Amino acid sequence: MKVGVPKEIKTLEFRVGMTPAGVREVVHDGHSVIVETNAGAGIGVSDADYEAAGAEIAPTAEAVFAAADMIVKVKEPQLNECEMLREDQFLFTYLHLAADPAQTEALVKSGTTAIAYETVTADDGSLPLLTPMSEVAGRLSIQSGAFALQKANGGRGVLLGGVPGVQPGKVVVIGGGVAGANAADMAVGLGADVTILDRSLPRLRELETAWGGRVRTVYSTKQAIDDLVPEADLVVGAVLIAGAAAPKLVSAQNVKDMHTGAVLVDISIDQGGCFETSRPTTHAEPTYIVDDTVHYCVTNMPGAVPRTSTFALTNATLPFVKDLANHGWVDALRRDPHLANGLNVHAGHVNHEAVAHDLGYTYLSAADALKAA
Image 1 (cartoon, helix red, strand yellow):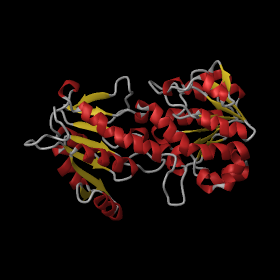
Image 2 (tube, one colour):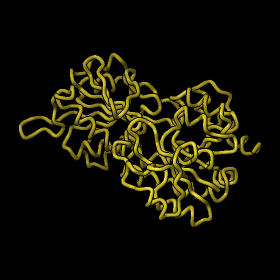
Image 3 (cartoon, rainbow, N blue to C red):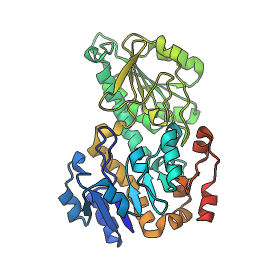
Image 4 (cartoon, rainbow, N blue to C red):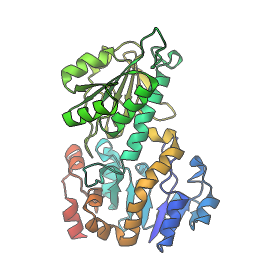
């Protein structure tokens, strides 16, 4: 099989779908890998590094898409990339389709097969290919939020950890999953006053135990959000419903009630965001202000630290890349029902129920798609 790795073209996105170590593994299995020139430059990996691992270097993205049977990326394909996809090709990357009707339409129109990292599952119900980037985004949310809180950046001028004699900043984390827990961990490490909201009592017990009582845990209700958000210096939205659009948990009125210069960081923005006032931003212009509240809503947060993020992501994706290359997408998905949960689009149909529901498509299950294939 020919595996293609194009350079990412989303604004200030420097991650890459495969490292030289991954290339070497796939080549060792008898496949060929075509990498677009300078695809790894943003993480300090040269074309020569890829060539030493056995890759062929292509001069353009068009050359990669034209030659490859399988495309491995990081971020969702941009519309011009969707136009290069073919019916006899399959794509393995993050998609986040529920928040992106234009991309969904383009993928459906292309007839290609698209397998999404974020809906691949594991035996314990977790999302193993989303987890590493959720860890990065969770930690970055506090780093980015703390920076936005500085007065010169539009914030309140609050130091999250405080100093002796001065209260620390108040951090509210909505969602106690992987991203939320990592956000709380960073905030606790800075010495902030941290509260986590979640709707799973077992999860709240785990979180309280993890920090030995150094965080407050609150069962998430509308009333709890109304009470806690207006008093926070930094609110982190870390809510996830796999494959589906994020629920709008923080209302525009909640935002209006916050202190002037308070900060909102919406990790859920890839899935549409969990604040009513959220809209996608980029690393080039990461923040905007609504009702005197700073919003950080970058849709590819881990791209800010592309070297760390690339190695964390490819450690998780490589076994699946190898399976897809070794067996083809049909047999690989038939062999692994968890990988089959990643199938979002095939042959003009939407194969993830939440995406189909949110965007108004007729749903064709992955199992039915595999039968037809």
